[in-house]
Image (cartoon, rainbow, N blue to C red):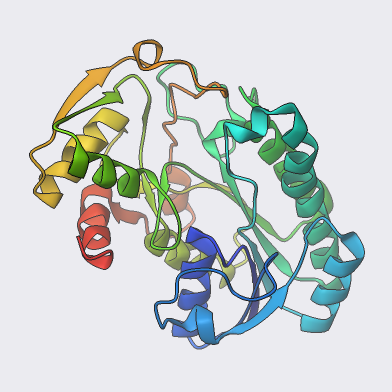
Amino acid sequence: MKFFVTGVGGQLGHDVINEVVKRGYTGVGSDIAETYSGIKDGSAVEKAEYVSLDITDKNAVGNAIREIKPDVIVHCAAWTAVDAAEDEENKEKVFAINETGTRNIAEAAKNIGAKMIYISTDYVFDGQGEEPWKADCKDYKPLNVYGESKLKGELAVSGILDKYFIVRIAWVFGLNGKNFIKTMLNVGKNHDKVRVVNDQTGTPTYTLDLARLLIDMAETEKYGYYHATNEGGYISWYDFTKEIYRQAGYKTEVEPVTTAEYGISKAARPFNSRLEKGKLVEMGFEPLPTWKNALSRYLKEIGQ
């Protein structure tokens, strides 16, 4: 099989290309930069064919995908700066990337008969209550611009294609780029005490584990909506931080605070990011390892 992976300059795209090559498939990576701009770690992503592509350019997308002729497109590219998405001057660009860009990819996939995997988010829901969100739930009420743009991307994919996987994830961390773990490690080095919210609940997603699942999916025709985060139960950001510091050997004190006490951010955040993942097992896919196990492996990966 031949894979075309967007967003290889980001956390997930980096690991997807590596997993593609590890399984003996052909992988072509893309991002908007002229050359691969991610971390230089000697992995397959640096050696794979790379195509500079602006996904908001419909003609460019169509031409590139027609030329490459992938069997599977894994669409990881997205605007992910949640707070910046709220700025009036950015909104048009956010929707151009997350909605229009996704539609361009989906239409190009349809034209060549390729499967498409679209990476979405728990932010398509309103994050209220305590019940985990089911993969086939259609009770969409995004709280912010980012969530709305990702939902419109979902609807574009499901409206255009039959051969699609829409995979919602949350609290992502990986080697290539910024994430919560890296931030908290940096903060913990320089502060004796940190304040972290304890009223937002979900589960982290390690891109290395997710990449394996996505290629597992691509090897099947079990299309539809899925939720995929690491196993191990639902936690708060406070719980996550405590475990990060415990495993890293930090003595930094972690103070639990409410979202209101922490301070209002530009974008409203969901309190309930619990994603129900039972459909993975029902469809024969192997769930991701526990988040504590993932954290342990990740800390070793980043040399912590």
